[in-house]
Image 1: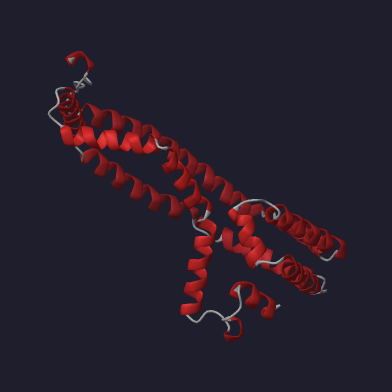
Image 2: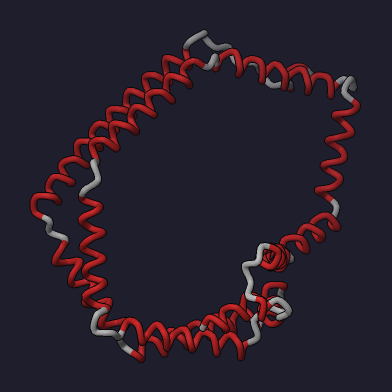
Length: 259
């Protein structure tokens, strides 16, 4: 019946624009407050710079942790446990791991990697290098002109607001509602057989168990498919060492050669 059809909302021309502009005023007011707070915080950080000592302390702590051989041994065990948890499963990703990343090769690679990383971070120069990099990064952050960033962002937001306000929202909504009403009306009286067949076809597909079974297979095979695409792409673009071209897993081969 006609009562079952969606109602066309009656709107005053320009009403949505006025509501949008009022809402934007509140948003820009909050933006200005955030701008002022950010400026105050940035000026305080530049004046007192209270984080330098904290950064140095974190750098020393990080150096001590990474220089501990036991920590790297624990990391190695954790990585291998994660490998076993994935590879022991009964799904496509587990099969891909077992075929392309055999446990012996993975364990050998990770062990070499951990030994190399420990050798680097246990150097007496590593702690000083970390502190120097952290201090330089912090100074670079402080050099950012926050006021300019906020002002440029505000200009962009104002232009975006003006563009949205130019859209005749009431007209667009009216056309959409009218289209929906006419479409449903035609379906109810049997004047849209093509649309009815489309809806029946979509519903039939979604209710068919074989569709979801094929979709499940498609999703499960996505990791392997992505890997094959990446493998072929790297080989075709000469990104793989010649010694690894015929290897069943060029990525693992390159990693092992590099290690």
